Amino acid sequence: MLVKLFKHDFRSLSRAQVPVLIAIAAAAVLGFFNMLFLAATGSGQLVPEESDGYGLMLSISVGGTLLIFTALAAAMTVLSVLIFVRFYRSMVTDEAYLTFTLPVTPGQLIGAKFLASAVWFCFGGIALTLAGGLMYTGAVIAGGEDFREAMAYLWEDVLDMLAGNPLTVFLLVLAALTAAVRWYFQITGAILFGASVVRKNKALAAVGMIFAVNFVVNLLTSIFPTMGLFGMGIIFNLYDYGEFSPNLWLIVQICVNFLVTALFWWMSVRIAKKSVNIE
View 1 (tube, rainbow, N blue to C red):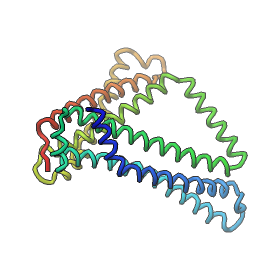
View 2: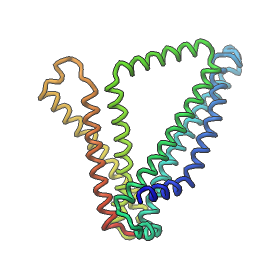
View 3: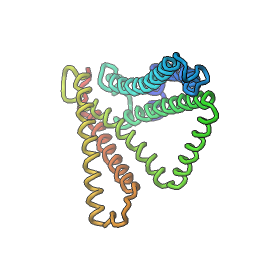
View 4: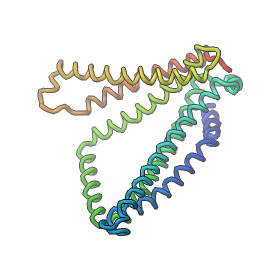
């Protein structure tokens, strides 16, 4: 049944998410040509640097680059908002009457929505990565030999750094993934909690609860791991070596993310089982 729920949620999200991915692709194409223009302008290939029109063309190309990056960031924001709007509608509005009549547990409902959302977040991330790669390609093509040599040295340094710190890279990726999962359940848990404590204006209550929960949780997950890590450093003399490895910090963050995610999962299932006020 979980697979059927996942397919249903995936198709429901696709109606809104496919246009967003198309918008990202269009912005990427525009960004590619804009980066060609920017790189060619900056290197003096289109207009000599001493020319009167050089400053204007450079300003136009830089402004276009900022607009493209803003559009890509806005597209990812819209993708995220649409996912949570869909969650709200299927769990709190009139549509929830149908949702909660299905022969499944609240955990399966919430789990299927999370899996479908995770897939669309991945699609969005892949689309943004490809868009960045396309824009980078445009810059490399038009940037000239000096630019390509500089980028080659930069990538060589980055790859050497990653290869020299495989454990840190792995922990960093794991910390980012667990933080993303924690963030998702923070928001969906806040939506359910906000809708469960009021009878009217549930959408407003859900939005307000999202801001309140994110502020409190993000504050606590920043302060307490730091305090705990500092205490561990004193107790176990971790600072005697003159250099503190980031690995322990990342491990603490990963553990905190797991704990907070488990808390919001448990809270969401209990609320979905007993207390959601459906419009």
